[in-house]
Structures are given as C-alpha cells and as structure tokens.
Amino acid sequence: MKTYSAEALPYEFDFSLEDTALVIIDMQRDFCEHGGFGEKLGNDISLTKGIIPTVKVMLDKAREVGMTVIHTREGHRPDLSDCPPAKLNRGRKQGAGIGDEGPMGRILVRGEYGHDIVDELYPIEGEIVIDKPGKDAFYATDLELILRTRGIQHLIVCGVTTHVCVSTTIRAANDRGFDCLLLSDCSAAFDPADHEAAVRNIHQQGGIFGWATTHDKVIAALE
Ligand code: TIU
Image (tube, rainbow, N blue to C red; front, top):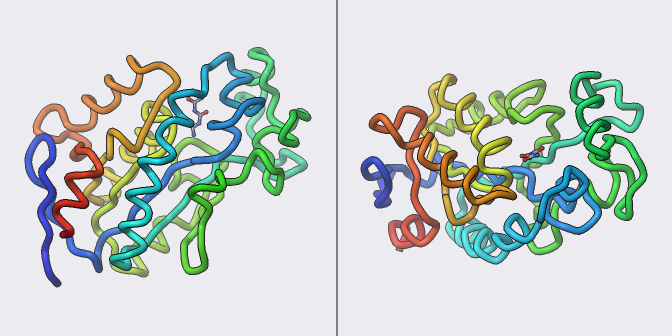
C-alpha cells in the first residue's frame, strides 16, 4: 500500500488509499437550508451552507482517486419509534419538533426532502449512506461493520456540525481504534466559536482524539 502524508496538527497524518474513508457527516438540507432543523433551533445556516463548495472539492478528489466515501444522515423513522423522548422533547421546547411539518417536509424524518443530502454533495452509486438516529454515527448503525469489512483504519471526517455530530463521531471512532483526521474547512458549526473549540479539542494534547487539517493539505498529499 502506498502511503501518503498530509500536513496536519499535531503532526502529519499518514494514510493509504486502501485503508481510508472520507466520512461526510450530515450534509443534509435540514442543517444547510432554510426551514430545516438547524434553522428551527434558532441558528443561522449560512456557515453550514457555506462549506458545501469546499466539501465538494474534497469529495471530487476522493472520487477521482477511488477512496471509500461514506455519507451519514441524522434522522428517524416516520413513526419516530427510534427517537428517544429526551431528544424529541428538547427539540419541541426549541420549536424544532422532530417529525413536525416544515417547508422541506417532516423535520429529520427519513424519506423527507429536508432529511436528504444537499444536491451538490449527493451520493453517487457505490458510496455508502449511513442513516443514524443519534449524533454518533456508530450508535445503532452498521458503520463499524462496514469499516472493518473494508479494512478501513483511517477516517477523514468533515460535515456538520463540528461540535455536535462531527466531534461525537470522531470521539466514538477514536475509542474503536480508528485514526481520524478532521477537515476544519470542510466542517462548520452555526457559531464559529463552537467550531473553533471543537477543532482544537480534537488535536490538543498531542492529538487526544485525532488530527486536524484543511482539505488542500490532503489534496496536496494525494498529488
Ligand atoms: N444542532 C446541531 O448543532 N447539530 C445537530 O443537531 N446534528 C448534527 O450535528 N448533525
């Protein structure tokens, strides 16, 4: 296996094409478009929407070199039988009831327009889509089985939001023994302060949860 080395914090991230997956977290209309879950929670979606072109550059490169690509979507069954009352009740308090009707269909419900991935980053044939009920992409999904079956050891992770689903998934992956590289410019939170803190929290203490870099460093490593 040929090894590539990307400049990163706290030090270079070494990976090969065969044992690496690009994991794009929750780039759904519900988090990046008007009227979705993110906006209903009282957030400005300009930052989550704003990373779409940058994520697309990274996605195109991964497709070009043949890297495994995994997309995740946060959402629930139409009958909400997989949505814990604790999550449902907190969303409702904020006016963002999971399952409520919105301009893009029922909020965070599988099969609805708002639940799906934005057009620009829409999965193509051969890419894996993981539907997850929680913030952690490993929780109650077959993600780990798929990664182990493919011999994946390294995860290049991006998407939204940095401090919620991206960070939670990286922490969960770290405990399962995967090496994670966060792409800071392909990730966003509604508040930049949350984003900055989340990025730092990944690579601090000598890379306590993993590495962080920008997409151009990974692309440079692959060229
Ligand atoms: N609210 C928030 O920041 N995020 C989420 O609810 N889900 C994800 O991060 N995908």
